[in-house]
Image: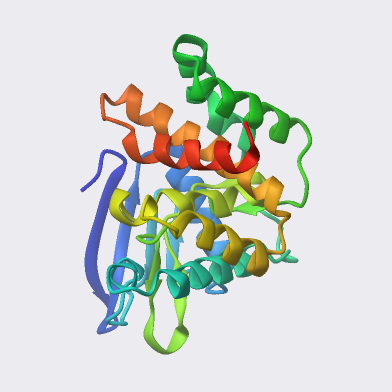
Length: 246
């Protein structure tokens, strides 16, 4: 159980499934988005009614976090990019009501106003990006190693979207702070990931670095609000700022 609801393993007509009950509005928006994707890049939805979502359960034995810990970080990064790319493909079915990406950054504005320093750089970059979006898409909003699962023959599929829309570069930035501090800040990892994401996503390297800086600042701001030491996102933010020459 999470603060936003419950996630329960169940069986549906004898087959393994997951039942998600969500009270939070962003989670309910994500549920509607899962139904719209209809198994294309995301877990197949079996049933959906308001705050209740029934979806297929991941059947594969592998995980992206395990791949990273076993020296396959490059491959894990390519998988995350491939899944994000599938989710960004325009669909004929109209999108549900979604949250504009700018609303996601409210925590960063308030933290930057009091902490300045690297937070100020992150906030400035975020405002610039949000004021001039490119390639606006329906976004997952929380692409990371724990939200893309092995569905066996169906491949790697996403779960737990946040129901956002905006510049598609945002969806790739979260990769860089995950799955943990050891891997995200390992020597050489940041530069390799930038190279892979730039190539697979076809996003300009400079723009990707700016999105990573903006996202890392937002992630750190949330951690400050929760009284958690934001060492990992701040470390990533500093790597992005250094690469940008800031």
